[in-house]
Structures are given as C-alpha cells and as structure tokens.
Image (tube, rainbow, N blue to C red):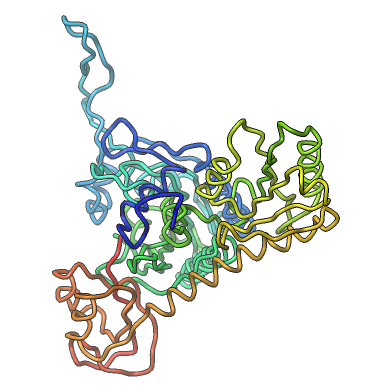
Length: 485
C-alpha cells in the first residue's frame, strides 16, 4: 500500500521520524544545530499562545534575561556544574582577517563568558536587586528564550545544541506556597497537553537521582511515544531555598528580619514538537491536533483551470468557515490555488497533517456539495457534505482532536505493564518496550540495576504499601520505568 513517506514506522521508526519531521525543520550548517521552518515555527507559535495565556492568567510577567553569563555566576551554585560539560564558551571578542584573508579570532576575553545552558545563575543576581521586602513577593517571572547545550549529534526537535523554550522562575515567602505553585504549573502543563496537544501524559515526581540539579523536588509529565520509548514532556521544580542562598536573594519580612526566598522554576521546550510527531504521526506523515495546526482546514480546488466557478465556490466556503469559531477562535482556513496536480497537492497536505481537507471540483459544483476528509481517517475516506451544511465541518475538526487523544491514551494504557520482581522488569525490556510500573523505594541506588540496560525511572507515583522489587523493603511508591529519548 502506498504511503506518503518511507520508510514506515514499523520498518524503521527513527528514519520514519526524520522523514516526517522534515516538514517542520532541517539540520543547520553548524553541527548540532537545527533550522525550524515556517510551518514548524507556526506550530510552536500556537503552543506559545496557549501557554502564555495561562502564564498571564496565573500572575506571571514575561521578561528577558541576557544570553551571556559569567563563569563565576555558574560557580556560585556548585550543583549547576552538572551543565559544565555541555556549556558553549565564548573566548574571543571579535574576528579579523589573517594574511591569507581568512577570518580568525583576534582579541581573547580576559574573562570568558558562557552562553546560557539555563538561567537560574543569570536570574538570581538580577532578582536579588528587585526583591527587598515581603511586599515584593510573590514574584512570578517567565521568559521565552533559547539556550545552548553543546550537542553534536542532532535529532531534530529532540536533541540539538540550541533549542527554544519557556522558563518560569518564581520567588515566594513561604515553603508551602512555593510547593503549591510548582504543582499548579504542572497542572497548567497537563491541561494544555490534554486539551490542546491531545497527549495522554503520566504525571509524577522525579526520583532523587533524576531531579533537576539544585531542586528539592522535580515534578514531571512523561509521554509514551509510538515506538514504546518515553519522552519527558515538561517539568516543574520546587527549588526550596537552594538558589536564593547561593545568590543571596533575600527579603525583609514583616518583623524586619532578612529571610531567603523559596523558589520554583518550570519549563517546556520545542521538544514538544518532536513529541507531536512521534505521538500522533502515521505512515503518511504528520497528524496535527487542530488547536495548534497552522491551517485547520485546507480547501483544494479540483480542475479549477476548467472552471472559474470552482475557485469562487472554494473561496466562498473559506469565507463562511473563517466566520465560524472553533475553540473560541476563528477557524483557520487556507485555499490552495497552487498550480499542481490534485493528487500531488493532496499528498502534500496529508504529510503536513492538516486536520481537515476539502475538495471541490466541477462535478461537486453541479451537485452543490464538497468532499471532506479528516486526517485521522484513511486518506481515501471522504464524506460528501452539502454546501449548505458548512457548519458541520467545525464538528469534524473537533473529531480529529478526540481521535488523536483517544489513540494516545489507548497506546499508553495498552503499553503499561506491571511486574513483581526486578528480573521480570529486565526480561520485559529485553524483548519489548513501554512503561513498566513496579513498587520502588527511592534513594537506595536501585537505578544502578537499570542503567546497564538503558533504562531509567521516569517518575514516581504513590501507592498503598508494597515491597520494592529491587530492595525488598516496604514502600509507598511506584516507579514508572522505561527506555527514554
């Protein structure tokens, strides 16, 4: 059977992913870098809009911190030296031409600077000057930015030397308030993952060895890809007073005593686009949830060169749809008038994952109908809809979101397994994948049994009392174990 891209997922998932994601991005000239194409960036912009609205609703203010930071700032928080081997270091301030006319570094910096791998070490010294009194708290900040973690082996959107993200940073007077806020932002992510991205996330807490460096707790949303590997979708960290003590971020409380703030940070990245591809894509390419699709409906005139009336009808349908609303916003409609063969044009939009395609040709015009196709259905499956029933297309848009979410949820539920001892866990991953859930006692070094097999504890979840499958000790915790990206 013909598919829009090759190989299929079953033949070679990694190569399939690369072929599918090329609609959205490509490799850059510098090793480890990527170029996000306009269509891919339009998807990221939609994700940004939903997230940004929630950040503002929950009292956050956007700001921007510098791209460059001093090494001394990183050294202030010793735990952040975990990033040291990933840092890109700027050592010279300008380029000059050598005798052969080649550009070469000229002036070495007395104090080399780092391109930010994350921003706690930048923001701490900044906020120190902004917070004076308990009246300044809570302070809730967010920035949309890029970071660099030197990475030479690129997988588009999944692993690159530079990626885009949002990073929230908040400062609180009370420990309980900081923990509540970290959980609140996790809930924001979960709602958007389900309601916007059609993901089926598993929510939990990172084990001690997987926590963000310098955090008291790291809450996470774990996603299961179609190949059975896990992908971390987003994290929210309770930082306690670790960073405020490192950078002396203090406030004067109501008694006049200086006290260190309690902090949180939270973030998601353009990795979400890779998750969209691997969660929802099929052997024909992308399948985009309607709320983040650049075009929710694409109208394809058939044999338009034979009839100007076909183009007029397509535009009239587009005008009607654009006056209607889906998810509180006007339906995004595009009429594709490119001079291409109809089949080629249709396959192009199938690969791009547009939720709804509408075809209108001379015969449809005669019958006053249109042929409507939903991306989650077989590409030859068409529904004949009267031109008087344009509003029914909006209902079909929503059916795409529901179908994608149901598929993601079914995959996660069917590929989640439970075992009673460590040997069964390892044996499972020798021949299979997915999530494995077992009783687990954190902080006992049991991850050492998993690492040689390429396994990790993705998150911890509560349970009634059970015996840890690795130590045999009593525990109230379940571990979700998987191979991960």
